[in-house]
Image 1: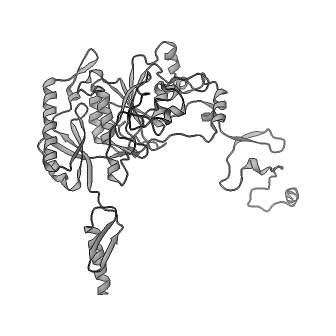
Image 2: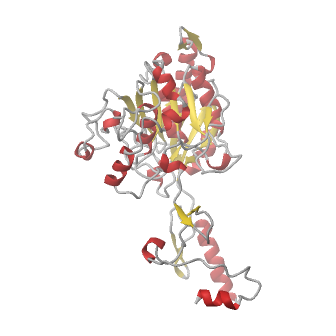
Image 3: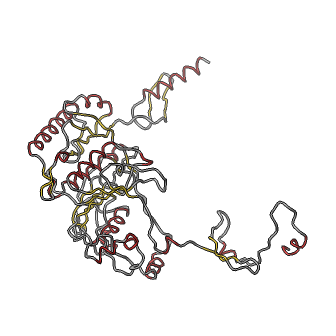
Length: 448
């Protein structure tokens, strides 16, 4: 009994004192002890919010453009420089990831976990905020072969039934309003600027030839006129490997997942009127603000970097050339609030940019609205479907009993067995009663 108690004690000490790595291994008087208990991360990714207000908080609108106070600008820049130097003085292991001046006055960093308390003591630091995640938006798919899908679309008369006509935007198009002069930022998985609807060649070999981590001769183009990849292909904010939680910016926002291109096409794509149709504002210009890697989730530091860029695409701490609209088709799960966005979106809209965000990213759940659309100044939009045939029709089967008129019923396949179409069964339906009483003899004869 004493030996067992000693082993349990050593195991308990091993779990609490093991090195901070996914698998802890230590030497003990009993030999090597392995713990498979998840250990705390050795790195902390977060933001420090500083004392002075963000520059757009008190911006004034002059002729439709936000103007910031130069004295306030100098003070914010000086405060950030002081805090960044203090972070570097604490430890050379602390790395500055990005700074925000217009929508927030904050600095994003990565540091050893045990330095968090020291960071909060820095003069000018209002609070330290842990970086939190946004789930990846889901892309709709079809099981139809591409050739079959193209044929189906050709037969649907896209000019009469599509998303644009469903919401009535075609009426504005006929009145000559189609997004002229508007610049829209798509905060998402990037945009496939090689796509024919988005200013590209429409050739697969063009897309395949591009290294998404390097500048491309195909970007920008006449439709996707700007943008940035704020995170890099390998970024995955929820990955156990902390190195993947650290964004690596590059200048090529090529979509590697599909969702951002879908959103960009919905906003301002150019269709051919046969297999594709134009977006809601086909004359608008797009900015690809890529905040997702090739796989996985994104996080606050990336999304807020995109909001900051939307306020200042020139990145000269001057909001005069801010984007007109930003779209965020992402959201915190199940109404989870994210305090940063209340302030960031308020400041961005104060600078003249309209913020449109999905009401959530957790499916069709009533009474649940997630950040960042919960900010008072954001336009929160729930999902819906248009009146295209595949959205308003269902598989059906005809059923005729006796001399009654044939009825159409929804066709639902069983979860096991072969498809009804493949069964090749024919026959006549026979009513056998309510199931509680014995089956009549004459009915039994019919069943046989």
